[in-house]
Length: 447
Image (spheres, helix red, strand yellow):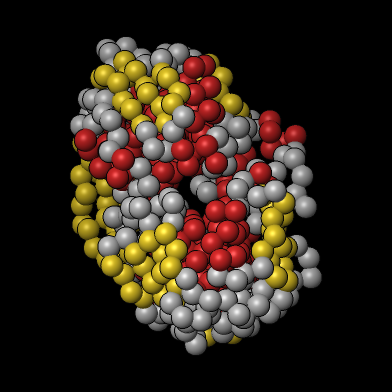
């Protein structure tokens, strides 16, 4: 079982000197959510699945190794090209050891659903952060379908005793969660009858799009999605666009800079993911969407980002599920806006890699930003002025990759250097972030 982070992991840090501008053309790495799903579905499909644009991050590589531990043949050709040779729905083999998913909550929760109807037992573990994250939100509805799942007081390790007697159920989810929905859809592939999930609002739909690409028929009405049992998935080609969540840091960076223009290439524009773009546009950001087209099952476009004078807003509740991963960097944008910004309905942030509300609050305090923590969000008193918004200081990311990258963007409105500590986990989602950031103008030193 994974233990605490090593000394080298906890001591990794960045030093960011203040800069005024960012400039250039960037292609951020492939979408993490899509990369995970392509691997999992390719593993149970019949024949070859070719994945182009695969995100070679620690999270996704943990999924690769977990699948290899169940006998799946996966070939990596030059990093971003991956071939998965699936043997069908019941081709997975019992693992000889616990499956270590590293830092990836997505991989663990989706695997719980996928393994629920296999013919063997598997134990799922992860790093020290993942071992603290809630799994009952997935385990509970799966048990209602007949799955045999055990957690340790709601958190990993998770023991899944697969069997083929699951039954489809109608499930009304108390939250809009792509991971819960995806786990139930994957379980529903072999459950008797229809598995039907209704959400209070639409969460990201990468699983639905990909299941269709693998030949699985789905029925959708409003915020309800349903699947019936299938006999096979067909191997296919999946083109992975650049990750919108990774592009989000540079969308905010380009918006709060004093000068320069950024072009972000081939960004995934799935409408269930682009809530931050709508939020920034409402704040007055100058972000143009160019060349919108279809890239496999997903829409993509270039984003042209220019500096803008932002204004504070109250985030519409319907956009919260579509921007949940981007709120750390939204807080940076809000601090640079004229007037207050309010986020409510985002209690999900408290059970991510860290309690992102609490950790972001400590970082904002360290950099002199006035704000108030809410149970389900935050109020930030934006103070856009002629001078810098952030003081210098030291921010502890808590080992949360998105928080570390968010505070890197604060250097574009800082009066003195910012140190961000506990940055090693950035590699879980965005390998090469530091190099890409330096390439467009940030002065980022690693140690």
